Image (tube, rainbow, N blue to C red; front, side):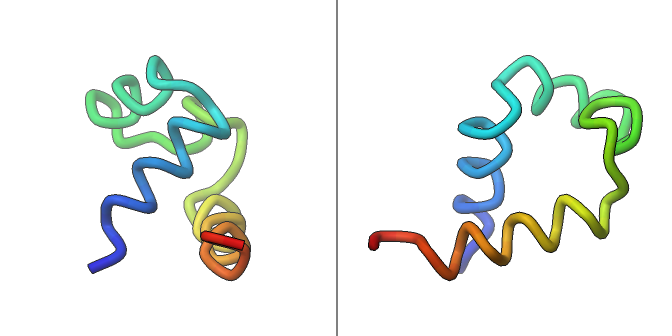
Amino acid sequence: MFAHTYIEYLDVTYGWDSVLKLLKTEDYQECFGKSQQDIYNEWVEFLINYDQ
């Protein structure tokens, strides 16, 4: 239900090239300089403010 917002968040915040790199490497630290948990927490904040 919210999967599209996760990709949208990553694209808007870090750029499409980083999203594509994540799909290839599955390494959040390498792609975003942050842990998967940090990115998740940021996405949750994004959802809270989504459509506001």
